[in-house]
Image 1: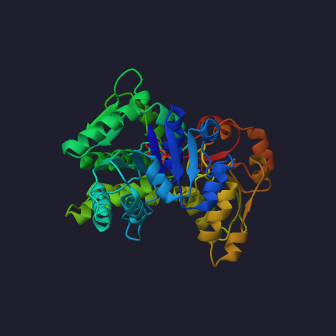
Image 2: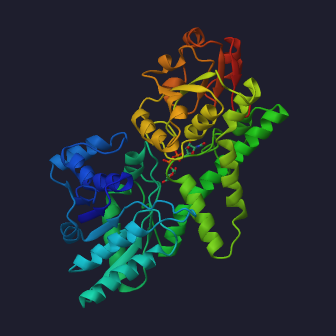
Image 3: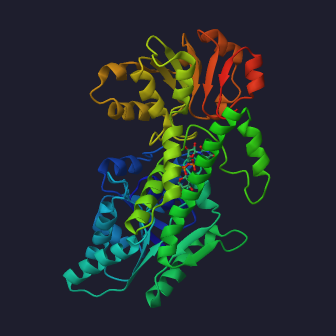
Length: 451
Ligand code: UDX
């Protein structure tokens, strides 16, 4: 099939590359000429395992191409994915400017039936706005053409996006009513046929339910995390071990083991943004969103859980203290620093007078970029943060090690080497990587989450 993907960011690029990989002709559009240039030269503008290979393979096979030409992109695809960014407004609601602009472009240039697919995470009701924008453009052109606006939310995890796309748990597609809706259903069924494996995983539903499903899934997962973080803090006070409690409850199939890990709070591009946006939607429609507000509040507090432990150990004034930090990205296998708890901890530590030497296997460049934003106008504080070339180098002469991201090679470190490099054997572990009894047996003061 001929598919256009508008927006060659994270979601758009994964979608385009994976759809090309099963044989479709895919054209990806982005207005950012720099991004398109990188893609046309065989690179990718983001870090995602497996994505470069699949992009290169399909580009060379002629199934995947990239353009900044809007008219060409509209002409190409019978199916037009909209996968542009929806950055949060100041009040937390999703900014639909780029989505509506993409819709208008489709309306301006289309010459026949199109299925428009909202792939960006957008508030309930957005498909109606996309429909209205296209209809308005057609009216201005004095043209009447059929089209269907569908909603097909993505459930991709960073670091596993290619796998998630290729082997989905489910494919949610919201289709409009009537004849155009049925045409869209048939085309979407055909498009996703290669991804069904042993049974049909497509859930067709009405458009609003599909739009809400995305928010419901992310809010549910965020709720589990905040629940576990709240319980972890309680377990600590009660002298219980949250890891044992986690196993104790996870073994109940109604609860399950997934997404029950306490830590330093959830970050990333989805959970924080989507929980905020859902709260906003609820409030706009007269619902208090009591639970979701609490989920967010617990998470905000949890981001500085390690700061509170550090203050408890050293006191509020950290001047003269030097911390090693392992892990900066909001989770492993990505360089994404959006809403990363490490940013909150870095800021808190240097505000209290400490120095930090940090290391992350892939997020160093991205860290440099976001620190410019976080410390704009505070050059002295920015200068208190150095980046090391290796995990071991970060440790040299530091008072303690602070672990923010659970990269797999942090899980079984050489404790003797850590001890030798640090001034004192102290570890603040925001990801519960180690067995407390073992680490304490190695002579460390070990502070973890909920145990
Ligand atoms: C998430 C959803 O999983 C995905 O389906 C959706 O499409 C986008 O949002 P992502 O943001 O890439 O994906 O990361 P995910 O692996 O879900 O982790 C989100 C955050 O929750 C991370 O900060 C992670 O550290 C945290 N987390 C996750 C926990 O603190 N505990 C857990 O048990 C699981």
